[in-house]
Image 1 (cartoon, rainbow, N blue to C red):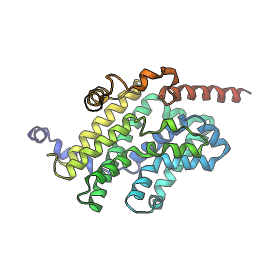
Image 2 (cartoon, one colour; image 1 turned 90 degrees about the vertical axis):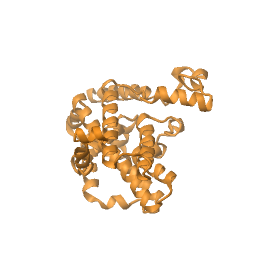
Image 3 (spheres, one colour; image 1 turned 60 degrees about the vertical axis):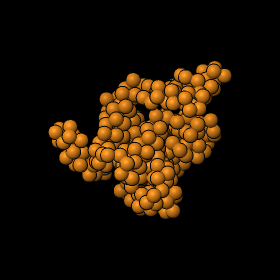
Image 4 (cartoon, rainbow, N blue to C red; image 1 turned 180 degrees about the vertical axis):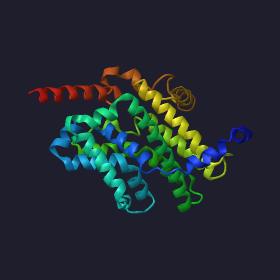
Amino acid sequence: MEVLAALNLGDFAQIFSKMGMFPVFDLAYYIVSILYLKYEPGSVEVSRRSPVASWLCAMLYCFASYILADVMLGSSPLDYFQYNSHILLASAVWYLVFYCPLNLFYKCVAFLPVKLVLVALKEVVRTRKIAAGVHHAHHAYHHGFFIMVIVGYVKGSGVALISNFEQLLRGVWRPESNEILNMSFPTKASLYGAILFTLQEAHWLPVSKSTLILVFTLFMATSKVVMTARHSHGSPFALIESWVSHLLFGSPLGGSEEDHHHPPAAVPSSPLKTKEELSEGVRKRKAKKAE
């Protein structure tokens, strides 16, 4: 803490933690979220065939964390939809991503340097949502530490936890892609972040909330930017998780037992397959335009 004081990071962390998210950071969050929706197989076809279903999927990508957290804490799942400015902004992003002439908006935000900036800004929102979820649960359940972790985890993970339901809106059923079974880096990081913020809320972690928000945001933003720039789907936690799983649960080092019983090509939930399907969808759309 003396080092932080010497570097004057405490004041900066305080200012950073009080910074408003709307509209700049929230806009980046909506753009990246709906961009990932467009990457999903069949999403473009759904947007042409059923704009209402496409819009609902987009709203889930943007606001699923609020919906789930409200349900868990006994509030109406529609509570967040009272914020008209957020709904209209997310809807505008959805329309531009899917229906902008010549696909110009999509091409601009998918341009790698622009996308890296947007990804970093999105992680600022994710961290703030985890901290807010833990704080909200703390007010409702002062000693419910597991509830704090769960709500913070849900607020950070967002649509990933109800991905199967969102897929049903697009007419897709892929139960093997359940996020609990195949946790991605953001989902794992949200869980670990929720644990850290719960420890801080319970005063078991000797660091201020503003400093924890700053440090965790830097970690998340740096990790996601590097992974996006390298087109990597790995996790910085992979080595530690492998050793912990081996020691506590007898899992083989370097992977799960399923990896030894199934050939790599037979794993349908791999993010690489999604990218391949995306490329195939892009080629099909180009062929249709050429016709």
